[in-house]
Amino acid sequence: MLSYQHAFHAGNLADVHKHALLATALARLTDKPKPLSYLETHAGRGLYDIASAEARRTGEAQAGIARALAEGWLPAAHPLRAALQAVRARHGPGAYPGSPLIAGHFMRPGDAARLAELHPAEYAALATNAPWADLRHEDGFAMANALLPPTPRRGLLLIDPSYEVKADYDRLPGWVDRMARKWNVGMIALWYPILADARHAAMADALAAAHPEALRSEVGFPPARPGHGMVGSGMFVINPPYGLADEAARLAAIYSGL
Ligand SMILES: C[S@@+](CC[C@H](N)C(=O)[O-])C[C@H]1O[C@@H](n2cnc3c(N)ncnc32)[C@H](O)[C@@H]1O
Image (tube, rainbow, N blue to C red; front, side, top):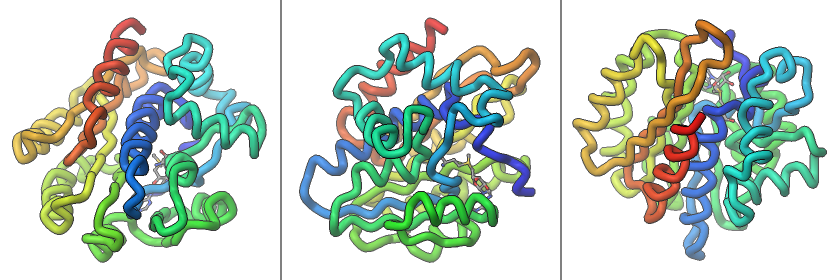
């Protein structure tokens, strides 16, 4: 357990899909002055370096965010591009923001961020990178269960597990249902990998059956290496904001050409 290290994968094609939707949702939520809660069950370290040895070893950021920028996938006014530019202005041209720093770009005084990360080294890095947030060195599922519904009552929960155990796929539909019942006005976003062996499919189908109004955004892409199991990225969003389906369709059109 806890062997997954996002530093090898940060800024890959799955991150670009997930983070473009996350930033779009946060931009929409913060275009009204009412305060919001941002919660995250699996935060990671918050800040990555796409020139690091880890990133260079896989080449995934080059095939992901570097290609996205070179080919203009993110228009000038795109919220992810704004967050990326702000983080690079502060941390250098190789910086890539994880979801906590993307959220941090949009948070205003009065908004509340509560982020869980279980891995000791990732948590320590997150404490350095996101000192403004309420950070929890604990299981993210337990944190969400304890805090929902949050105060302020409007906002977003991102669930971004590393799917290291198959049981994650089995338990997530029921767990997400319970969280959605506890926080019926909250936006709840679950990221999942699209796998060549279709291990994700039963989970995504169960979620869609239980939440027919939700947004199911799935994009495919070539595997990072021959034989690599991940061939796409999925985001399931309960209570999506206005405009998120359009962004999902825009991304799907780009990814369908890869
Ligand atoms: C996919 S990464 C997170 C990436 C991040 N959300 C982003 O988009 O930048 C998943 C993280 O979850 C952490 N993790 C694994 N199991 C956890 C748990 N039960 N509770 C909290 N964090 C956990 C891992 O250490 C890892 O840093």
